[in-house]
Image (cartoon, rainbow, N blue to C red; front, side):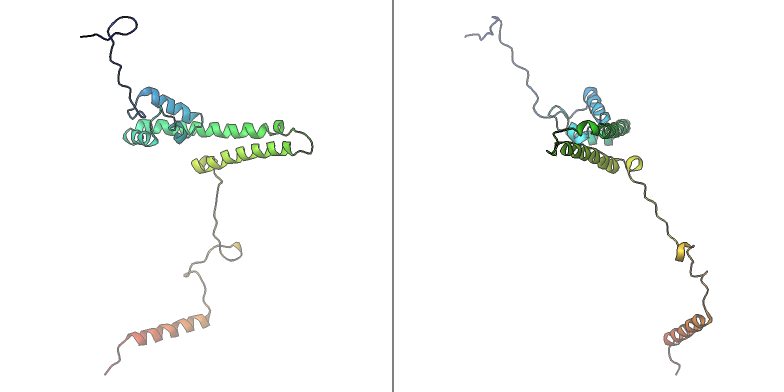
Length: 182
């Protein structure tokens, strides 16, 4: 019987089976990487696009089963939102640096428009993701005629003609509702 050996001359060892697919078990290194990515402003879906990271559904299952992890992710997201806002501010402040180009080519305008699009996209996402902090404040007021208070039916003053018409209407309804007497 012939023995197979490796180049070093020793017996050949079986290679360890390599795991195929994304990790599904939670480990501290993956959780740390997720939290750091979220805190830097990267959305969870983009973090989970990496083949070495778990699927978004797996992370959501972890969050549902562990309230502590869920709150840590929420805090990391808030920090990420702040980072995105800071990036938008840096981009808008630096827009003048992009406003240089060959005269008459429209190059400067195109650069400024690209910066404007980047800033507006970030602000729109922030207003959807965290409307309390980054959304537009909407208030609604309801008032009566000429901006005055709203009058309820009991407060409204009826004229004598309206009272008479209302009494006649009630009498007709009452008469129609009663059966005729034999």
